[in-house]
Length: 388
Image (cartoon, rainbow, N blue to C red; front, side, top):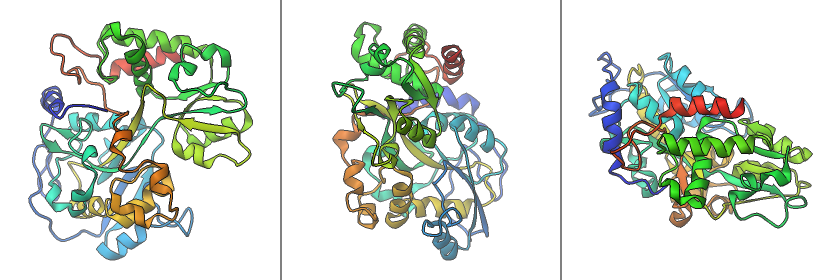
């Protein structure tokens, strides 16, 4: 976290050359902003992480889409995706009006001209969103807001309390000390995981000069890759499906590694695991709903963005998925009275320890202008080398 608001301008320099215009009419070009809402259309196509738009078809008791449809007349079609790279490929087709994107995808969407800047005055619920989630490098470019928050959370360290002793307080247990649990270390399967290694190096190898784990020059990236290649020898499983991560810890195939709070909460009561936010802090996510620059149902899309940040809907969506809501007003609607406390909702001090996923770009996000930083394509290539 701790990204300066001024980085929005730096990002804009990097992406402005690639922003493209789109047709007028019911759609909105990537460089312009809607000034007022019109009559709602009758349909809306959404793309998001599984569980972000439940309509009761998976579980009749879990449904916050139907009330939206009845209230607005916008009939929702939702498609879930499994990774940010998959989300980007799907959204490029132009078949979706809005997307819930993580920070490792948002700037790529902006740079490609796939999403439009938002007029937040047309999204009343946005005013109640926690300030520390607004105007951030992953949702704001050149002072223009491109996404409204859905929920947020940290990538925690989970460990088997019977096997991993003493209880770890540092990420060193999965990096420099990983050999003690060879074959049973687990890590998130994505190029953005390179930032976890960079964060560790930022705290333990200050001579590298890393001040932002998403702003790595060639030398700093090489150091992170070296660390991750060493870790690779001890990793038994990389995961992107959280259900598989749950199974891996419950069977004992994994005993220590990256996790989400929802994974910890979903473990069997017989599982001997715990999860902590290590001393170095952690990477994490603050997902954003963004509207396609070629949306044919832009009025319904705006209404969805307003709805998903409204207290009752946001409580339902974030509690179901397992992440913190984006407004304190949502807490009163959670079915679990301890929900907001469990996820540290609104805790600015806790949030300040999280470095939210942000797409690496060549214009260094830490403000350096004397070097060129490595972009996401370089991270993708490096990740392939790490996994072999």
